[in-house]
Image (cartoon, rainbow, N blue to C red; front, side, top):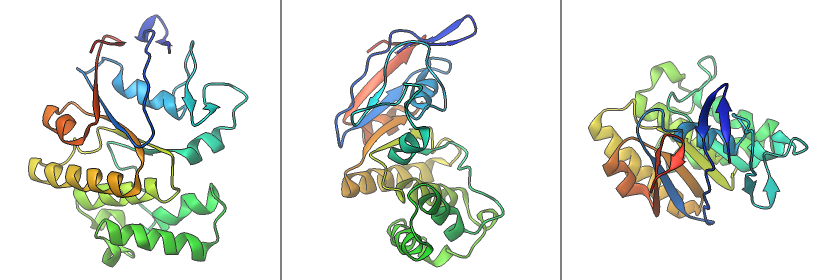
Length: 211
């Protein structure tokens, strides 16, 4: 895969394979291309050369339906990105109703199961602004999982949390990933986080896979 921002070669002949059910952690200094790399997997960033295959679908092909891609590839952002005007339950049911065309009853049932799993069923009516950072991140995780994606992308999701909360959240993420059997690509600066979460670690530097 190759990606340019004008004259800057951000991803330079990057080759990577992630097996089903595996957690691959992508590390590297700021500007190494790691966040850009995972943003190409669900086409938040388009590439200028190469192919990206997810479960038999070339997501970089212009003819590929991006809604289908994003139903298969979930994303957990660094900044939570919850809708501030919607309560916790509404934040989670929106995607399965729009993307998977689930009924509200079915979407709410699935959402409550996931809220229970992340320990926040009692916060279903709370607004995002009433939650702590760790609680917001758990809601973001539930929202990403509710559409049952084949692949889940994490872009430094714990970097805004304090050290103690980061440790408990990465344990939570690993537990849920193993229970659900989801395939994940996880970007982090944190070496201990990489060691705790990964089946395989990729180190990027200046747009290439260095190790």
